[in-house]
Every structure is written in C-alpha cells, then in structure tokens.
Length: 478
Image (cartoon, rainbow, N blue to C red):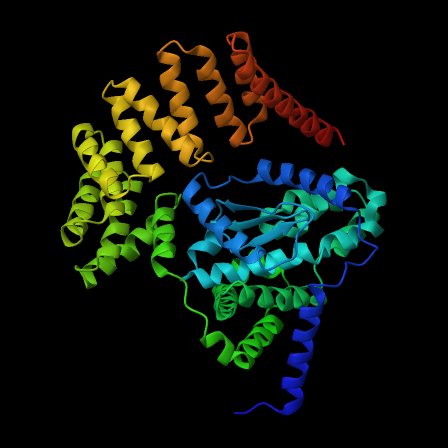
C-alpha cells in the first residue's frame, strides 16, 4: 500500500538533517577532545578488566576493515577509530567516546552477511561522530572522571555486562544515579545515529537493508523471554521505532540501493567459520551442524564447520574425517587444507599436519595462519630455526597476531636468546592488556640486552606499561 505524501516528506526531511549533520560543527557544550580521550582510556580499562577480547586476529582485522571502509565516508576525524570483538554470547555492540567500537561475538554470530555487520558499525560510528555521550558529560563532571568512566561503562554494557560498574555508580548516591541516567542514549540520539549511519552506509557502498535485518534479529531474540532480552535493546532504546524508520528509509531509496553491489559472501562465511573454533559452548552449534550434514552430505561448508566444532570438543578423529570428506569435494581449497592441518597438529599427528600445512601454504602463501601452524609443527618436530623464521614471518605480515609472539618467545628462550625471548613475551602480554606481566618481561629483556637500539624500544614499552599500571591503581583507589 502506498504511503501518504506527508510520511515520505518527513522521511526526506530527516535524511536532509542527517546530510547536514555531516558538515555542521558539533555543539559547543560537549567536553573537550582531550577530556574525551581521557574518559575513553578509563572506560577501556574497565572493559578490558571485565571482558575477554576475542584472540582471533582475522576476525578483528575483518571487522576493522569494514569499519575503516565506513569511516572513509566521513570528514577527517580528530582521533583514530579502533574496532574490537568481545568474546561474549550476548547480543550487544557499543562505542566509547573517542572512537573505540566493540561488537560481541553473540551478535556477530547471529548475522548472515557483511551488510548486517556494516549496519551495526555505521550506527556505532555515528554515535561517536555525533559525540552523544560526550555532550552529556559536561553536566555530570562533578561526580569525577573515575566514577564517570564506571557509569558510562555501565550504560554502554547494559545490565548483563555492566552490572558491577553500574551498581558501583548507583551506590555513590543520588547525584551519581542521576548522572548515570543522564548518560543513557535518548530516542533522539538513536534516531540521529540511524540517520547518519544510513547515509554513511550508502556512501561506503553498502546496502542499508543489512541494518534492518540485524535489528529484526535483535528484536526477535526477545521472544525467548524477559531474561533473554538482548543487551543491545537495553543500551540502544526505541528499537521498534528504529526498525520502522530504517525500513521506510530503505523503501524510499530502493532505486539507489539496487545499484549497489552485494558484499562478497565468501569473506563473511570464512569469518563465521573461524568463530566456531572460539565458542565456549559449542554444543548447540554442534547439534545444528550435525543435522545440516545429515540433511545434505554434499554441503562442503557445513562439513567444514562441523569438523571444526568436533575439534572444539576434542573429538579429533571425527573432526579429521569430516574435514577430509569436505576436502575430497573441494580439493584445492587452501582454507580447508589449512584447517585440516591445524586440527591434525592439535591432535598430535605432526607429520600429517606438516604435510597438510605445506600444501595449504602453496595455495595461501601469505596466510598468517598457515605460517603460524606450520611454525608450531616445526617447533614440535624439533626444527627450531625453521619455526623462528615462520613466526617472524607471521608477525611481519600481521603484527596483531598475538600468539606468534608467545611461541617465538618460547623458541628463542630455548635457543638461549634470552633478551629477545623476554621482549616477545612482553609483547604477547602487552597485547593481552596484562600490563604487570608485560612489565616483568620487559625488565628481564633490559637486564639481558646489550643492543642499544633494542634497549630504546624496550624502555619505551616499559614506560608505557608502567604508566598503565599506575593508571589502573589510581582508578581502583578512586
């Protein structure tokens, strides 16, 4: 049924507001950019204490790549944006002031295509760009920065993830409780974030119906019962209004959106496949994948994922069999061969693992996972020199590949390169936000390192970790 003229007119007016908001300076009553950076650092400390960041560098790099593509549609920003994936089953995503954006694995696993992730990221980027939290803090600064950070974390994380931070804030009294309520997103904040986010999506070349799809899934999660209400609905209110608005926006831009190509499904499928290996509770997924394989034995993707799920619960022989059957139907799939090699390695079948990983390397010569697990195989087979070269190649190609620092440190220590071993172990702990252990490792590196160039680098890292340790202590005392 055709909508009345006034309805379309309102939608176009809202879009015009969104377009204008990309060029108009922010309101002057927000906190300064320096204060925003400081608040963000304090919020981040709370988040890193409370949550585990997903250790898979591929998933993090994929999310960051989509985020950066969306950011390219914005004017130059006063700070760098960073993207993280939190290992948590809840449906949530949030952004701190100063451009730190988080997506929970639960929400990521609920998605079916890249456009859905892009929709969520665009909305969170818009919250940062519009400085929604920063504008609210000016009236709450009497509470103090440490308390404000706790309250902001509680609001962003919702009742499930931020109960401790939120409860601590409420315990401070009515002033803190009022400030906490003031920090929550309003319906106007949500509407503006959607307006700006939809514009960013289109400018970045994404079909904006992905945002509609993921919002519907978040709403559908509520049907399971009150205790299953997604955190996203607590931290991002007015979801019904948002669905209606985004649906109408997509309808009004049908012609424009048809000209935008769909995102490559293969990249998103690979990320979803990788995340199976990170699940803590893989049981439900295991049952679902077993049923999928039974329904369609020729489905290579289901067999691939089923094999990884079986490996997650240490059913090694079954896992290898499933991956081999998948590989028999797709013999030149480097990703399948790599994952088979990984499972063989973890099951203790070292010669077979090395053979599979060498084959995968031919298909994926620059793939950090191939290099890393081949290095693990060489290390277990007693070929330390080869392992060192492979781990160093991983770090060169993907510096955020945290586990490579740990295993490189292990091998170097056994070879007697004590300073380099401590240096790499320090980097491993630093990237895991374990500042105390990182500082211990960097001090050991300094004690054993005569190289002046390396000493300067280690001293800088030690200063950084010690500053973080002091800041954490101050926050706890505050």
